[in-house]
Every structure is written in C-alpha cells, then in structure tokens.
Length: 118
Image 1 (cartoon, one colour):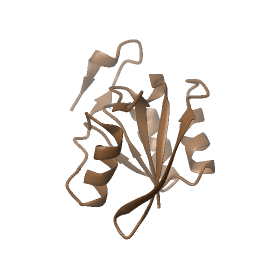
Image 2: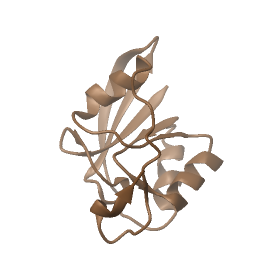
Image 3: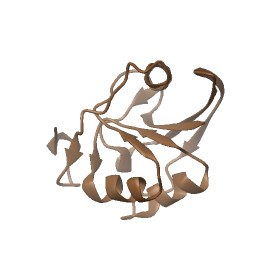
C-alpha cells in the first residue's frame, strides 16, 4: 500500500494543493517499509489526484483539501483523510494503526489555506 502525505518539510500541510511535496510511504502489514519525497509538480485543478494515482497512491492524508480534489480522488478509488496535522510519518503510522480518521475538512476557497472548514 502507498500512502501520500501532503507535506511541508516533515510536517503535514494545511492545504494539500499548495504543499511543498508529498511524503510517500510504502506499507505492509501495518508497518512502513519504504519512503520517498516527491516535490509538488504544481497546483493545477484536477492534476494532483491523477499524478498521485499514477504513482500508485491508495491513501492521501492532508490538513485540508478542496471539494474538487476530494471528488477526483474518490473517482480514482483513493481514500482521502483530511484534518491531519503534525509529523507526516506519524500521521501515516496512525492511519495504518486505525487511529487517524478523516475530519471531512474541505476547503471552499483556494486562495487561503485558513479558509478550510469541517
């Protein structure tokens, strides 16, 4: 399984489209078996869900995300977890252990990350 965490450095970012990049963790049997960092190739509507799907990502974790992106991830069969914060790897581990659940935080405006709401 591949889990992508929208990140700024090693921390979960508040809005996935404007992140520095994606910490992508490979997992087996609820354990992280590999990791890599992929720089954000750019925030264009609809692009990032397809980009991450092509990388084999099955779960995306972020602080918040726009409704359009959530819809595209869902169409691609990728589970969306929003409302996450803190260390990116710790968020991935929490997800694997069943402790991280989505808050449903959706961004209605893309100009400011602080406009995300549950």
